[in-house]
Length: 223
Ligand SMILES: [Fe+2]
Image (cartoon, rainbow, N blue to C red):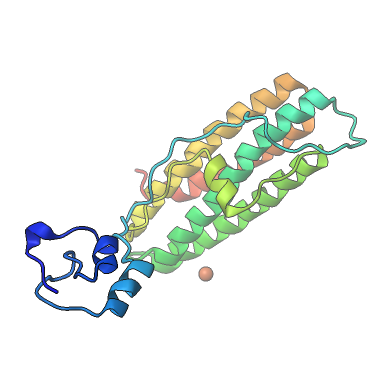
């Protein structure tokens, strides 16, 4: 059955009454099977090249499951440090794959050097992921280490998916590292004030590593 454009409704109604969906060319007659297939497997809207920006979520939602432990740090401090570390765990996982995104997609001058630099930086961030997660669990927390949880907990903005040139990746990735480094610095103060020198020490080491990574990337476009 053919419909004038003005009579078009949505595909579900049209299949139900045997008419032709108008979002397809209404001059064609399509089979009921094809119409049903289109409803079951609708075309996805074209995806944007930049992942959706999201509001960074800080630590402190107080929802992390805690376990009994013989760790001598008081429960209050452990709870606060677990929430702090949860945000840094999400951020570490996020930056690990931001770095791989750059490693996989970079093109242009100095390709091999930059491609390999990103891989070396990725290895460092993977180490941070493990160190943070294991400190978090050592003080009785439950690590939220899945990609989905990391999306919720990361302190970073989404990394663009369409970057290609080496300088663009270097500049954008440096921004992410710098943002995390600033958050780590704040975390060091929080751990110090809370009275958890070992978490403070962990974050200090990570902060030192991040600053070195920033230097390695930034040197490509400084001066
Ligand atoms: Fe690789």
